[in-house]
Structures are given as C-alpha cells and as structure tokens.
Image (cartoon, rainbow, N blue to C red; front, side, top):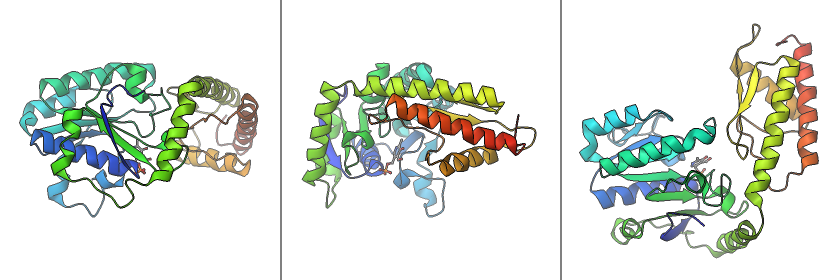
Length: 298
Ligand SMILES: Cc1ncc(COP(=O)(O)O)c(C=O)c1O
C-alpha cells in the first residue's frame, strides 16, 4: 500500500518514529544535519526552551513551497546534511506534488535522504499517504494516526538498506512490539484495502469546504477554507474590527457552544455522513450570525 515501504518497524508515537528516521538517516550517511519542514513531534521541536544549542544547531527549519532556501542550505553545507524531512502543508492543495518532487531531486543531488512525515497524511490523502497521492517516493516515512483507528501505534519504514542500520543504531522501546495495537492496525488496513475510505474523505471534505466557504461569503466573514478535502485548513484574515487570531478563536468558541469541536485543520473521517456535515454547516452558519450580530465583521 505504501510505495517506499520495503521494510517496516513499529513504535508507539509519531514523534518517536520521526526521531527514529532521523537517527537511521544519520547512521546511514554518517552526517549530522537535518533540514526540516513542518511539525514532527515534540522530540524534534527545536525552537523551544530545553534544547541544548549543540542539538538545535544540527536541525534547520525551512519553509514549505519554495525550494530555494533548501538549495541554498545544501549548497552551503550539503556534505553534512543527512536528511530532508517534510510534512505536507495543509494549505498546499494539489500543487504539493511539485514541491515534494523538487525536494526529491535536491536530496538525490546532495546524496541526502528524503523523509516524509505521513503521520497525518497516511491513510488520509491516499492509502499510501502523500507519496501515494503525489507519486513522489521518499527514502523513509512515518505513519501513525489513521493507521489503527485511534490505537497507539506508529510505523517507520522505507528503503531496506537504510532500515537495516537499525541493527547498530539502536531504536528500542518497552512497548514498541505491543501486539493489541498491531492487531487493530491489521484490521484497519483490511478496511482501507476493501472500502473506499479515501473517496469518502474526499467527498465529505469537499462538502465541508464548499459549504463553509459559501457561509463565510454569505455572512461577510473574512475567512476561507483551502487545501485538500481530507484535511482542509481554515484561514481567517483581519476584519476592520478584530484581528485574524481573535476571529479564529471566537469562531471556535461559537462553534463549540453549538457542540462542534475543531481547530484550524478540520479532519473529516469515515464516520461522518453527508447529514453530519450538513448539521455542522448549519451550526457554522449560526455561529457566524452570532459573530456578525456582535459587529465582529460584516
Ligand atoms: C505531522 C505530524 N507529525 C508528527 C506528529 C507527532 O506525533 P505524536 O504526537 O504521536 O508524537 C504529529 C502530531 O500531531 C503530526 O501532526
């Protein structure tokens, strides 16, 4: 199901799986630096207190969508770069494939490994994640959230020659081989294989995107939903009265009062029916009316 998965190992959390990939990439290449894009879990979140400078200095955060800063970093210090890591950006939409392909080519040119963080995109953008949807194959990848329908399990996987460095690099965890979540994952994979889960997410997500955008326009709200239907992103802009961050929080609060819980990225799932989405949209409409009534926009 997953194009790069010649070999697979299991852990409990997405962050652990990403850290494992980075360790194997360093062991395989003999290089220290990692160029990173997106959130990969707390273990590799470097821009916060509690991270030694020596550790931070070998992780370079880079932006989504523009290959130039990546190329600049590789030109300057490519001999020390073990891997390029990337998590799909929720605002990207169908154009994401071009950027992922550019990273593939840069990684190859500088003999670094390409690692896809598919913790969200796995079994969501396609059964094989972003690599399946966009036909760009990384060297290593991680999967978790959608893999076992809520049971705690993560996979790190990829090229067999790279995965085999685990024999000396040491990646081990008390519950790494726990079997109940693996059984849940096996059951879920059978559903993904035989039922059109991704098609359902595409249809329900499209209903949500179009319905919300229609309601924002009708209410005069400075907001829009962008991205691919399985993981649409809600974006607010400033209104004359209130800034975008405040509007986003107020909308979440007004929606919550109406018993809809979400945040900026709105994950539809296989259980959502068309009627559920209609209900969510009706409550969004009521939330927007309340906000307009308070003079927040419109
Ligand atoms: C894209 C992405 N990568 C990695 C992680 C980290 O996974 P975990 O919280 O299981 O460590 C998350 C968690 O939200 C995520 O969204």
